[in-house]
Length: 159
Image 1 (cartoon, rainbow, N blue to C red):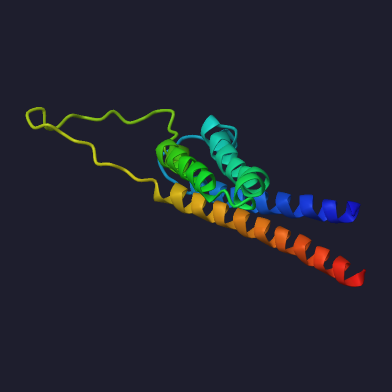
Image 2 (image 1 turned 135 degrees about the vertical axis):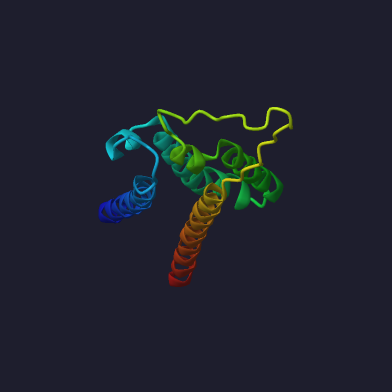
């Protein structure tokens, strides 16, 4: 049992290290920032990015699925997921991660006569990452629940 717990922790650690290593590789190749990789890793934007996705994964796995989904309370479950999705949509963690430039370029107003509207920017990477993390969390929780059900059935057959 202790060995299974160790494997579980090791697998999760390796998974998160690989996930965040990919993000570090993406932001290290992004031009326009004078910061080192170490400075970006300890920046509040990277830490917020990490917190958001780790929170979504474990909150879904250990709170939302057992408390709502497995008890067939689908409406509250999906409402909370929708609220989390909206949070990721408005926080834009990936865009903020890329946009952290200590010396932002000054914007020049080249059209003072015509009104200028900023285009609406959607952080599609953050949305895709949210859906991927949520899906993986849901799949792993479903598999865990399936194993528990299989073990119960095996024990019941043995008696």
